[in-house]
Length: 285
Image (cartoon, rainbow, N blue to C red; front, top):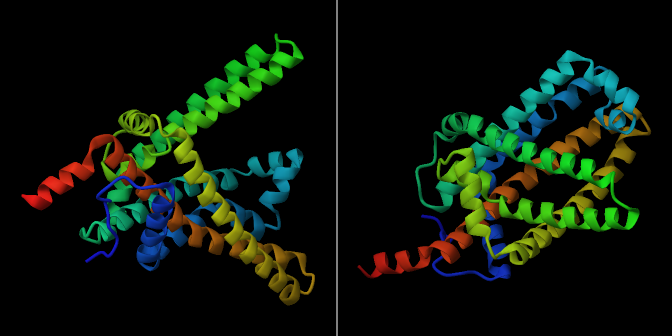
């Protein structure tokens, strides 16, 4: 039986949401580590291939000409898109397993369920990407006709609007996976659940991000020291070591993202849909 009170029986404070996140993370980490590792590894397929071929995607990103040369390699492009699909599938499987563990559901079959839900998840990503692209295109077309001061003000407004939109739809992937909803329905439901909680959710996400960054910095510092000692200045070995550390860091962090998503969604459902009242009625019945 799960020792995590999920879903919560009352509305949670910011600190309690983060505490629930860590409790879910600790309980599910080991059982979800394989999915998380596979997902992070899949996301690095193009980089690993480029590294084997004696190239580096990170360096290419800093050099437009090098990046253009990389993108002309059809294998790199194919591995990049395959990696996106596989990453989405393994993340879905991980989150579904986390949900099953904390809700005392049946563990198993998550990969099959994730395979079925990956196309809608990718569709959700495309919808969000198209919406953001449309906003930026409209902004670019408009800003060119404005004075400099108005351009700065418009950029600030655009930043606020985008930030609000990102927070408003932040629960959509979790809703799509947990409730088996479609992309548009997930976006609409996330918008309704997060309405009026912008600042609260922003604080939760910011604190969680700071915690992850602190953990990343500590591990990266130790890894950098070890790479310098063990690689003896060999650039190829240092680069390969960096790829391995990146996969390890991603595998450690991915279950935390899932735990945070589940904790936030559960709290919002309690606040907006009275799930706590339903639980109390069922408990006293």
